[in-house]
Length: 163
Ligand code: GDP
Ligand code: MG
Image 1 (cartoon, helix red, strand yellow):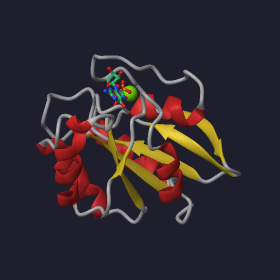
Image 2 (cartoon, protein in one colour):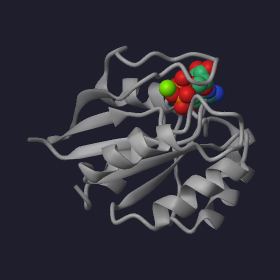
Image 3 (cartoon, rainbow, N blue to C red):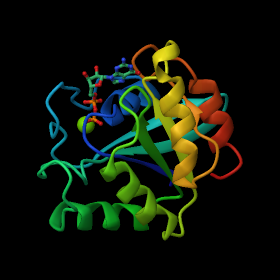
Image 4 (cartoon, protein in one colour):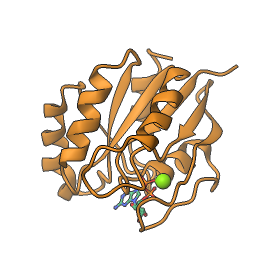
């Protein structure tokens, strides 16, 4: 079995876009409407000889904007148990929201190694969001643009030592 990397984050940050980028196929559904990914999706990624399974989640979706979900969060918790690493995705253009902070606090309590992924990082509009994300206490954010395929090598570089 390949190492498993789970993608976590609030709705609309670009989790499914990142999944598609890593897997190299359009498997996960991307949409402007939050909550399009209804369940978990699995796909295999390979770059520079490193292979792993990627899991796209919708654990914090399907909820009223900023409330902490019970049922869906449970599903993410279950996914996390089998994971070797988590990619915590934030939207560096939108900046941090209370839900990002909530998820970040929750992830800090988990055993799984976390890579903080600051998505939508193309162009300068992302800079303050990237800076802000240090406050999550999850280490150095990796700036990527899942949509434009930027920063993926940095992401692999961050994953390499932990899976
Ligand atoms: P999810 O809900 O976290 O799975 O997010 P999606 O992957 O469905 O993407 C939500 C929206 O963000 C879509 O409109 C995407 O096109 C957009 N998006 C995803 N990645 C990027 C990116 O790197 N840059 C920009 N500007 N938009 C992105
Ligand atoms: Mg999605």
